[in-house]
View (cartoon, rainbow, N blue to C red):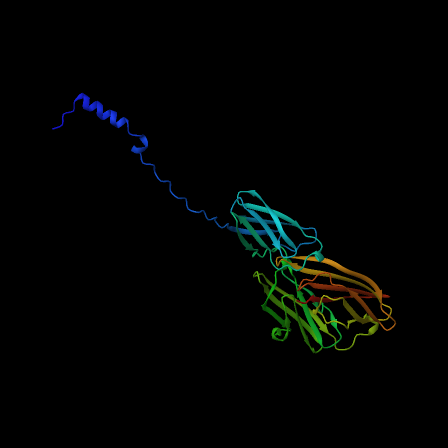
Length: 339
């Protein structure tokens, strides 16, 4: 039995006091922090306004919604290269671009947004099909024109599809009726136009065209024309024929020479309008050529214009206003830039 005398207690306390504090404590080990992996940024939405058909000088507004505190840009191939978007509030980025001359573009087909954060990048392609619902989808540049009397055979029936917003026609939905008969299978149909050629007996004919675009919008349009039983006296009609190109023909990037025939010494006012789809969701229209000329003594004429737009699918609307004495005639020819 151990007896704790005052002396023993004093010696025990003295011994404990002599032990270094470091020997009495255990230093906890710090946990090894894992290597941080930057989180991939996320793009929730990418939009552009306006989406309807636009003209030169129109301001486009791009908006991107995604991971905050990043770096956002938009590119449209050669038309726009890394347009910077500003973060106006956390996770909301905006930027504007003003459409310039079409010859400065190269026919982009898509807009791509990039969002960079923490050394990683996310991208999104513009998939919306913004359109102006107030503008109906229609067929344009119809031939023969509504109410026109045709004096030659075979008759070429054609029209271009309006490209509001650059939205393409779904060719599988195009249906063409001529005097109630479905001639769709025998027609040439593209996203830009249709044409049908046939020998027709004299009489009245109704054309009924229906289609849908890839955005699901429907169109239906009808018009009528007459095929004359006998030739109309030449003195009442100013003849006009393009001999170099058929309507809706495809052309390349080289200078385009238009040749035609009309009455001798006829005054011709020519205008060429180019309509090109940019980025697949809006379109640009620009006048690319004007000229006034006179046909020669045999009625022949020729003019040449250089395509300024190298965008596949660009439509060149050639309008010729002819006049001689009291006779006038407007003639339209559509040509398409080939791929």
